[in-house]
Length: 127
Image 1 (cartoon, rainbow, N blue to C red):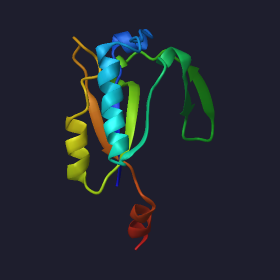
Image 2 (image 1 turned 90 degrees about the vertical axis):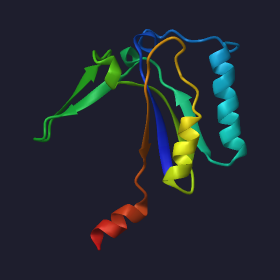
Image 3 (image 1 turned 30 degrees about the horizontal axis):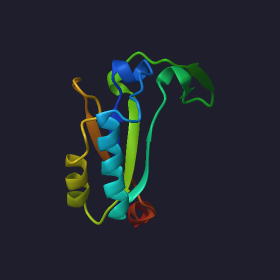
Image 4 (image 1 turned 60 degrees about the vertical axis):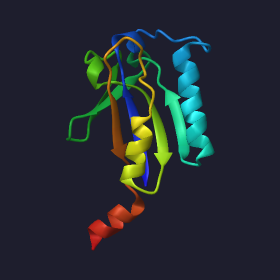
């Protein structure tokens, strides 16, 4: 079972304010990810650049699409980073996500966890 731990953006992350490599948060986050790797459950982890460096492809449902350049207004709906893990159960994913370091010191923030679809999910839906 694969799960994505999603770090929601804040105004600071959207402003591109990066912590330094020796920042206590970065040290704690690196240690956490090393622990995930040692346990054999880490698939990938990264921070994302601000939405001002990105774009969206908007489809109108009638076969046309358009590109909309960032930044995007609703910071609370944006993602600042993610960690992708593969575990044996939902409960194991919950345990790892509970230990995820608070991603922004001194700021209220959210970490969301979502399970990824597996090919078996689509095969089961067909039957």
